[in-house]
Image (cartoon, rainbow, N blue to C red):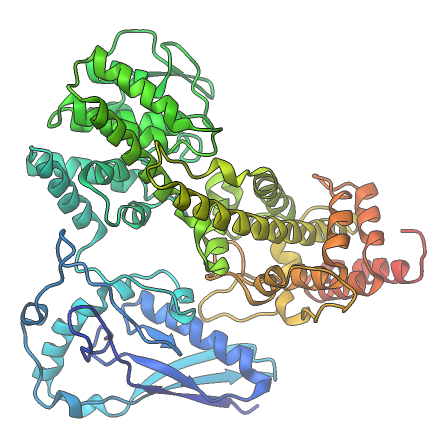
Length: 623
């Protein structure tokens, strides 16, 4: 059987940045070859396979430290050269200087995507061939490699190709996250009058880095610290470093290092956490007052447990170099990040901070206490910035990354079952259906301005409404799958019905090949934005789910908002036979037939049972 080959030609890429308006350069591979933009020519019959091959090859190439590819977009850098936000002068950017005849050294690379097997392309072989750079001298290539590797290093560390292909903004930094933690912490502390020794900075940076880099942190990772601390003052930055350092239930308790720092503050009994009844040092007694807690009380994971422990960690670290006043201001910022509270939580924080100021002689004037609470409100609003994103695909992608944080089964991406996914979606759907946008953003005495709070709240309201409908569609789709599973043999891994999750160098049949969302019927009312997100996908792939939702999009396009609302009343978890039958019979027959037949092609051990079930429903026979 002959191979069918599709060539992909690469064109030069312009690397824009804020150092030079039009600095010409290239993202490079580990052997110094120029990076590129993709321009594809492909036949319709192999469009999906070619695109997947390129994207997955890009991911695999990236993980090996090779060049990063980008489709139909220009890479723009946000250089972070120093803590003041000023960019390096042009002469400092490239100490090696320009190469001779650099403009004449344009590279043209050809990637061959070879498909062996039948017309569906069961096997892919990707090979990169460079044709023009072979004549470059070893010296020039070495110099180009050293210089360009600095420009491309952050891209080589990206975990997947989604951001590269979706036009997302990518930040380029000359510093690793660990370096940034050390340097920005040192800068912030110096502005407050104290610079600790390097060994202390190292200990704190490692503590933060390790606390936020576990397998459970799929959204609240180290990068989150830098995302929300842009243009923050020194107190807010210190708060940012620690505010999510502890997620007690998500991380499975405290680490050994965290336990050492928090010794004597809490008592862990079974799965509950209690505040100690014994006397603590002054800074910790002050922290308890700022949070409004009492000695011996049980700490609620939804009402301040994580924030209190994170603030206690920051207080224990910084107590060696900061006065109680600044410790109180950092603690106030972290307290303000307790989310989804009732009306005017900043008023209560002001009262408690005023009380702490008097009891512990912090020396803050009334207007300084007011300013501290306003700063805390501003920081808390930053922490929930995701709810205000205008790009709905990015908002949902970030939201999707929260699922594994609260669902351990989804962290093991190859073995979770239909019931596991249903349970995770049920919790997230319930959260969005009950979330009040008025509880997200707050100010204190009109700072931040009332108009801004109103604007943020309205943006969040729209996003929550879209997310709620999106989650309902996803929950309905997985519940339909659970119904098919229940009526044909019981719970099973999701992959048995939907196919494999995407992997580099592996393409296999999946549900997205067999179910194509159709245009909605004219007499249906539905949210076109939600349908587009289901059909076209979130911003990026997750480790446990594909970004598109073909089955959910198909169902939603068939039943609309009214049908969705009705179907949601028939869901049950775990799904039993009675609810399974009722749910399948409530949907249009053609909808059930297409999903059931698609699953029969993938779940081959249940193929006959699925086909028989579909036939009974079509013929109105008892199931």
